[in-house]
Image 1 (cartoon, rainbow, N blue to C red):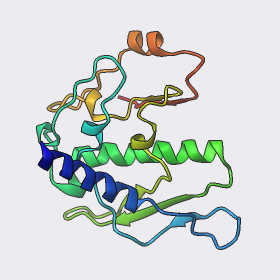
Image 2 (image 1 turned 60 degrees about the vertical axis):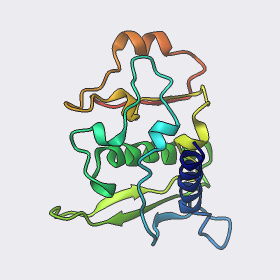
Image 3 (image 1 turned 90 degrees about the vertical axis):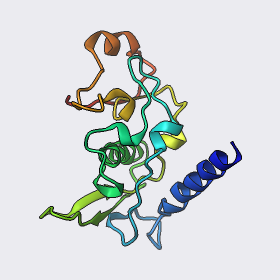
Image 4 (image 1 turned 90 degrees about the horizontal axis):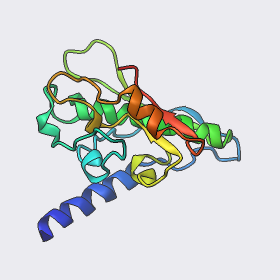
Length: 169
């Protein structure tokens, strides 16, 4: 148990350290590319289960496209989730700016991109104003089908939701 806790704390520290501080020297927002390592957090969805009914938490290796690191399905969903939190931050604070980094995957011609949000799922897991459907708990590990149904969406929707992060699956 102590080993699992140590691993959890190490992953959390790495996630917090990867967040970029404001890069502008004045008060103007910064938009654009930043240098730096882009590191997947393969356990972010395990540590922060989805609140949406119908989801099921699974280990990252359960997904068919479970490549390691940056090539994994879990990291793809993490990057999409991070994009949503960047957009949320910009909507709430127009002076916030937005940062991204890019990286090259083997056997892929185009660069991949990763948003660098100031806050992410880890910071908002209990935030009931966010309806976050970009979560691995909601994807079937073999066929990628999303489990969110119209009935669940209508049941869970309320005037308290400010940020509906919905997929097109």
